[in-house]
Amino acid sequence: MSTSEPTSDHEPTPSRTPPRFQDLVRDVIRQYRHEKESEAHQIFRGAAGHQPKGVVPQTVNPDEETVPGIEHPGSTGVIYCSDRAMANGFSYANSHEWANLGQGAPEVGPIPNAPARPTSIPIPIDSLEYAPTTGVKALREAVANLYNATYRGGKSSQYTYENVCIVPGGRSGLSRVAAVIGDVYTSFQIPDYTAYDQVLSAFKRLVPVPTALDAKTKYKLDIQQTKKDIQTQGLAVILASNPRNPTGQVIKGNDLKELAALGREGTTVILDEACYAFMAPPASDLVVSSIPGTYIQTMSTIMASPFLQPTEKAPLSPTSQNWRLPGWRICWVIGPKNLITALSQSGSFLDGGANHPLQLAAIPLLDPSLVALEKVALQKHFKAKRDHVLSRLHALGLDVDIPPNSTFYIWLNLEKLPEPLNNGLVFFEELLKHKTIVIPGIFFDINPAHRRNLFNSPCHHYVRLSFGPPIADLDKGLDAIGQVLQKARRTGTRHMGHGYKKSIDITLDTQVPNVNGSLSPTTPTFAQI
Image 1: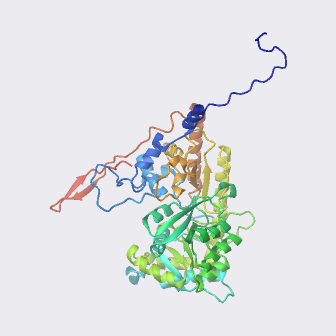
Image 2 (image 1 turned 90 degrees about the vertical axis):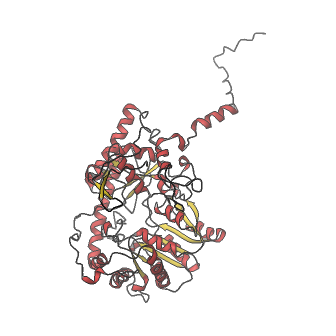
Image 3 (image 1 turned 180 degrees about the vertical axis):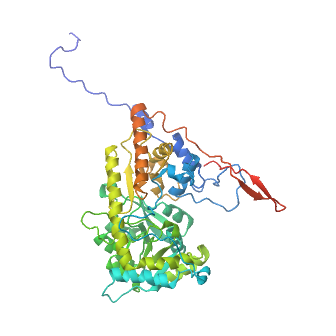
């Protein structure tokens, strides 16, 4: 019998040999990536406070003597990225040469049809004294009156100054709130505002319980699942930014009502960076009524970003109550009266209160007629900038999966880019070479213990871009992104992902006191980052 193969034109298709187990293992090993293989990730881990918690004492310089009891909490995204930018030549003296798309702050100059910018501040003699830790009463009244005029017209329940606490910045407000909450399970979401990582690390009485938000549902917080988690996991505190940082989405409508209503059922709800329009009437009732539980709104108004909702059909929607004055560091917390008295006490040992003269200067800015002008001008201006950035990213082949409908942030997915540009840390480091700053997505992975392999982070392939800066700065940064992508297409990525500057040595004309009181010049050296 012949053993030759059939010669028919209709040969049977040979069956595929099933893959061997060892081949499958090798394939998994080949595709598996670990942070130890990446220079950008090792630079990140080398920063004090970024190593896994509870392993070794964390110092800037491992050779220095560790100060007993000191533990680095880890830096927020903006601080780390600013330090890395300085290692690449950035300074505040030459900041005009850079495009800072990382800083979470709006442009502070004039914008079309907005009220004039403050150019001088009166300083009465009395304002040279300390202000109360809850803030100047007149400013607290102005905040309450603005809320009442906007949302409480014709209603029996009204805000008073006793529902308002003035704080020196949004982070200070968060710290004060965290300091007065007892030993509780605290729900937080991933991704969310970077400072929550440090808050949940530093305030040990808050036991963090994470919830991962899904891009498939536009990072929507599932309120029904949250209710189940409260029952099954014993959650006592819900912490969330709203509008959402960094995704630019917002909890609104019936979802917001249901979330705020959880306060009636014994859960403390903390909505950080919330703006007026998203505080629905039921939430307002929660603030001024005596209820079992708490609804807290930390309002980064004078200080923080313009939380606009740039919609085509509703530019007058009252979603932006911001004066674009981040340097003033004047914010407020809204809550029940007993919360405000507790915040007064925590403020007495945490920060001592907000700047007295600037509190007085902020009072006229809360006039409802001026607020109406500011928010309309701001929404139109920032909507135009958002659309401009989205259009330019599209032209670069970087379509945004979920465009922002509030805030001035864009959550950009890099997964479609070639390795190693497809992860946020390397993308960030490559842009530093082109004098552009963005924030790697891992900073929005609220991971208090810092133990997860960074490559496994759900935020690993993302960066946050801010369209808060002026349009010229935005174009400078977008040009830099285009240059990085063009280089990758032209020469490949073999030159990317390594060769980064890890420290900066600078000489300053500074002097330090000698033992005898005289001054000697010194040359400080920045430690390894």
